[in-house]
Length: 368
Image (cartoon, rainbow, N blue to C red):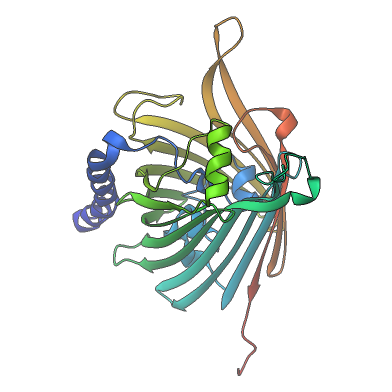
């Protein structure tokens, strides 16, 4: 690789680090550690089965979520992906749908929609009638849901093997008729492939994502909140600080039928010390490791570990905790069906969920 290629690659990777660090320094003092966490769950059973070690591996419609640069791997005229999962015995529902379409041989666009919500929540504000009697017929229901709308664009660079991408995302969060928030943010991603090696960098919320919350409470609701000693919510702004994901993957071939992909991701946050494997006041690093074994490009077996951290038990002693994940995949022509057994991050086997996702390519008919 000559000097010009190396410089071009460095610029693409280092620019995201500089922007993320600059934005973090501006907003870190008053921002919460956890914001818009529904976007940290993940989409696609292939990625979740590999423990979310996926930013260097992704090359399909789910790139709009994991790394927009990967959209250039879409080969059909239109690729569609979808996933539905449920958590906490079906109380919370997580839905994803994605679209990706190549513009030409050097660029691709994509659209991603994510919803994480709890529906049919009882509203007991008017449970007691004006006479002081309990009337269950007065109970209504509402939903609390978070939505993300993401538009992605990816393009090949002049440096062989290098491709970059970006996301513009709109966040809409709503709690019944009581409160709602609108937010806007930007992501940037890059992938570089050389022989069997793949490298990636993804800067999420590079300019920080700001959610502006507004509340509409009638007098009756305020009275009930006061009587039950609940805080009256006030209009506010919630900030999601930047984070930088770095990934590397290596592909191995075994004969003419078997191939193996090994991947490692490092998610770096800059909002103070977190309970991650590597932690400091400056940066906390959350590592993830994933493997995918494929046979004849049809059947896939996957595994991965994530959420590696030390937890304190009832005796105040710390133990290393690791979240294992497994998955299977089946690809028949232009249709892929993937399955994963995974958790959303609490390391409790009782709350593991079965995840299914579907992906298919649409091709234009000859002569159309």
